[in-house]
Image (cartoon, rainbow, N blue to C red):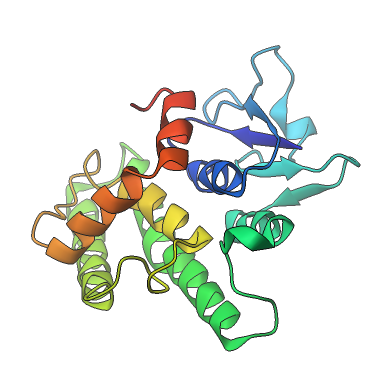
Amino acid sequence: MKLYYSPGACSLSPHIALREAGLAFEPVQASTKTHQLSDGTDYYTINPLGYVPLLELDDGTRLREGPAIVQYIADQAPLKNLAPANGTLPRYRLQEWLTFISTELHKNFSPLFNPALPDEVRKMGRDKLAQRFAWVDGELAGKDYLMGEHFSVADGYLYTVSRWARPMAVDLSGFANLVAYRARVEARPAVQEALTAEGLN
């Protein structure tokens, strides 16, 4: 398998999942600025949408969209318990989390990366994110991870997106459950491996 990624982008989530699953893969860096690979290949010829992540399977099949990719990864290593079994209510809870992180956190961060965004709009975006993170903080009360005591692919995604808070000036320091959770996730060996591989440590 090949994982097309950009350091620190949302592709860190499937990168973590692959390392947690113990699956063999080749990381391929795809710049989100130039949309080129290190060898000069036009990334649009691989993913016409131009963004990461993209997972290329050994037979050449390509999967886009992080929430789909991480569930595929989890299903390749069921003994790692990275996702509940398909068709069960816990699996739908996992999908609920992946959807929330994607639509309420990830997508609300996206405009903040635009330097031309007016300050007033930027403040509105930060306030919205703070409200959403406050809710997550409450959901984490008494839990090690989003789904309870087991790390899941949703945790890798939440951790990845929450890393953007500091550079985007979204203050998470008042959310004690979230702060402790982030430290717990970051301490995992597979997460450390992914961070080191992407030059983020």
